[in-house]
Image 1 (cartoon, rainbow, N blue to C red):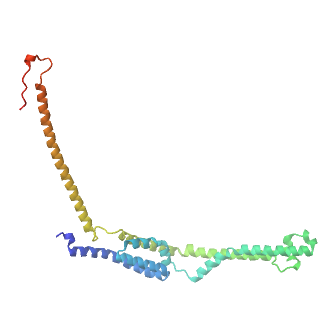
Image 2: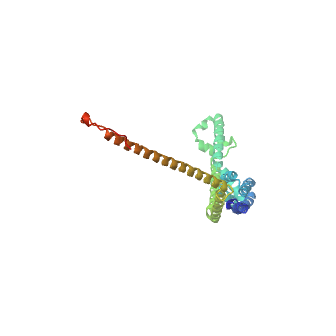
Image 3: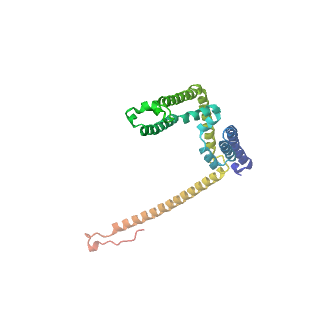
Length: 276
């Protein structure tokens, strides 16, 4: 009996593959538990990846691993931002358009008030528009004066500068250690996913299907050997035929030499005896 087909040997091979897959599946399960606290969907995806690795479902392992981004996973696990900083970032991003909106609103109301003032008092057309705006158009309309609108815009811009400076200082100066932890965690996740993908390369020579592969290789080698023997036998037969042809050619050559030449006299014609 072939040792490779002995049941204990086959069981040892299967247990060896399982011993390789189980630690990777356990690490993926721990990672899924950490991620599930931040994002339940990504945590479930990692849990399914761990199950696929443990069960040896190679196609599912490759599909789940391709859907995961190690950088995003590392940030999701490592970076813990307080709600206050998130609110500040939202406020900063929203206030970017506030000075533009306030300015155009002031221009719209000032233009309408200027039109009403000129209809009531046409003689004021010679006075500058900004001066009339600063004077609130002689009090005919409840509009913000030019200086008040300028102060509001300047205040909004100053607030944006302060918020942006605070957020960037925290992100670029105080969060250096956080970025380092993110990079280290990302490298660990990439290594883990790479190990899982290496296990998903399909059955190897240590898998149970290696026996059938070896049997096919032996059968192919036997077929090649049989064909080589056939070719060798055909070559031997051809060599025998060549020897017979060579003997026949020698006999023909001797018979040709025994034939009379045109210069021979009739009386000199020799009797040709068959070659023995």
